[in-house]
Length: 411
Ligand code: UDP
Image (cartoon, rainbow, N blue to C red; front, top):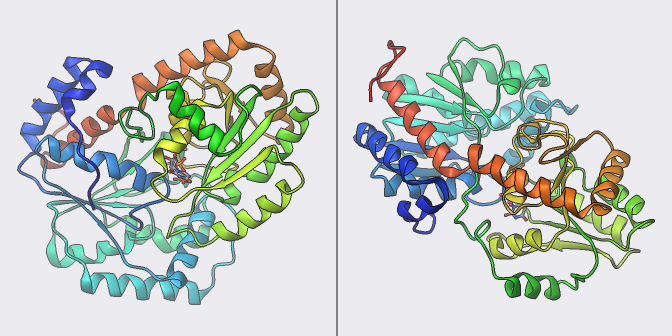
């Protein structure tokens, strides 16, 4: 798995030369270690989005980094999607047969997989069972959890926990997510790449062309949510909020998203969304193919307000993506959205469709507030959620793993 080429120097204008120098100093210390990432999909969703940008940047720094994806059929991904929902605390029926499907997939992947890393970072529950290989090959293993597992379904958590505790280290996106574990836990927030097609600056004409392509009127307010069609992203709640707003403003709603090979529920949720939107031509439901990054970039830049009205959320990269583009974001007060939306400063945290609608009405009536929040949001992302910070954190992890018994490592 590889992403497009990136040059580290290009980030200098955004983050300053000191940050780049520091990355080179750290890279020198960890270059001799091979760093392998393993997840369950090459495209779709936040983990693939991050790895697509992070892996090339680490390589550019000379850190030997690989990214591999486990195999899985639809039966397996049905099980892991149920696990995903259950770990987020959503009630799910988990049968013994499902656990068996997970174990069988794990056995199959263990047979075929090439473990090339000295340090192996396994992302999320789908490939977590690969840790069984540690007894045979050793190496250092990190479980990188992108999910909010603070209130998991106990059956799934108890099933996974013994496997997770075989790892040398776990990484969570924020302290709220962590669980009581016998292994060390490290907090690393995800990130966005300011130079990717998803986030880089666009010309006004590029934005307009995309709005025009989808029949969106730039003269009227545009409310947007970019998300996989997933119930936990609450697209129907967004439509409810939009309907309230529509009574006062001639707003349009864009719900844009695609699927992910490891998310089998997408088609069903998309059908529900299309049905709810059918009677209103101002609701644009856009099913985007993978790698629609420039179009997504343009859709967000052409929006007045961005929603991420999730009911449960890991991090929610879409929030930082919108804040970076100076858009006020209205988001569900859950998971990593709470790290990104400083309530009343970079956007608003809400608990219901009505709350989302009220905040949207407030923002639509106050251009200055939108601009102030946009600036604050951009700065917040710049200080906390850019790729360069993420790369630094991972290199620090590699370094720390080399000195497991030391509290302080001199660089
Ligand atoms: N995304 C995309 N196309 C889509 C829907 C989403 O490229 O049709 C991207 C989105 O811009 C973001 C990522 O996929 O970068 C989703 O990450 P997030 O953390 O918001 O949610 P997840 O899907 O991982 O739950």
